[in-house]
Length: 313
Image 1: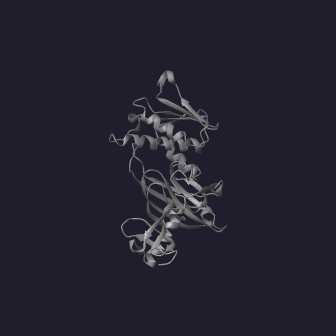
Image 2: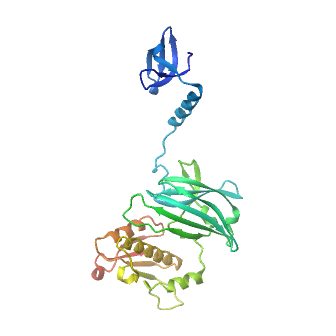
Image 3: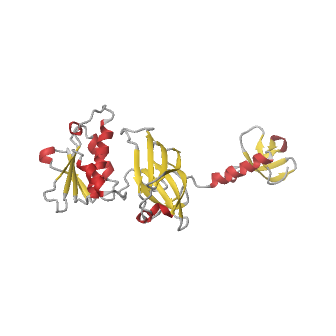
């Protein structure tokens, strides 16, 4: 035995290094610098390969542990971009939720679809999805992102995410530092990507067919001031199971919210009803995270009580 050797106590669970040898007495330093005087016949040498592993574990244990809150990102699912060079980016899928997600990411260039990555990301984990070249800024190319959410624990049924994303250079503004990855990343919230590129004509055709959204638009030539969406179940004209209603209503709310942003209206009125207050609370919870919202308040109390919310952008 020599000073510096890794050893384990024969009749105990402690492990450490030899720091002194005094005849048959060996001083073993364990965690926190505590030294145990031990008889030589009461300790055993740790195998060299095991000692190397022990050393690696010790180094890892000295690193500060990163919790889900150390990255200071709001709850959500994000695409993160790290501008490694001007010509390409390293991309990450960031699952800052309590659910496990299954993802598939492809690129569409109007002619072909090329798969980029697929897999599973556990709750509050990140996954590298490879490199993207600067050609992602080409308007003719889109990322097709499909995400299925496995709910580990949730009161709200989560709808799958299925979007076609045009990445713009504006997405690279204000990167934030993620301690868990030790990288600066520009984040795109995939649950609410308001910088998506839409074909205005296609968008208009889709929205005009949505009977829930009643536009207060007297003049076609004048800018719109307000949109209204009614989320009462009887207005949705669909057959839903009881456990599907809340998720569907939230999905319709997000559609109306996206339309309000696209049309640059001043405010959006959401008629959600009173009930047990669950839908109202979920909407207010989402609004508190949306940076486009100036403020929101209960609307038309004399008519709806607490059954309506108006959002100001």
